[in-house]
Length: 120
Image 1 (cartoon, one colour):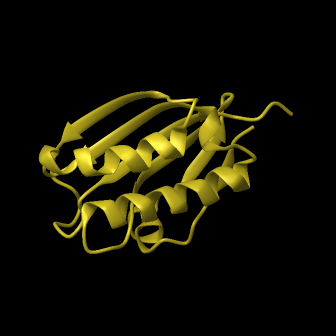
Image 2 (image 1 turned 180 degrees about the horizontal axis):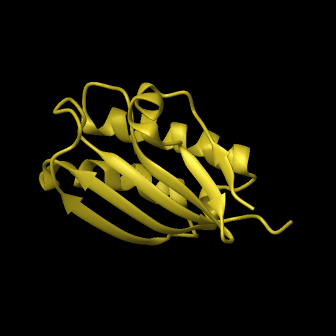
């Protein structure tokens, strides 16, 4: 069974995707950007959006197994480390950071997450 979770973000309808899909024992969260004027505020905002999708799926950041970070400037990643460390706490997932262009230059970080789905 596949379950789709929508957050109502403007790009979901424009591009044709949803925030998260629960399938195959995992919650796959789409690359998520946040709002704010800098990378730290955008990181916090993206994590809030992801957290809401995980809650709807019955999961949490403690269930994360993989996270990918995408930034247009790798030098901006380090200021996010304390936020990420606090978010994942004692249950950190494997992680990859990639420097690349994002859909709009105003975005400074995009976060993609895979989480173990709750057992039903």
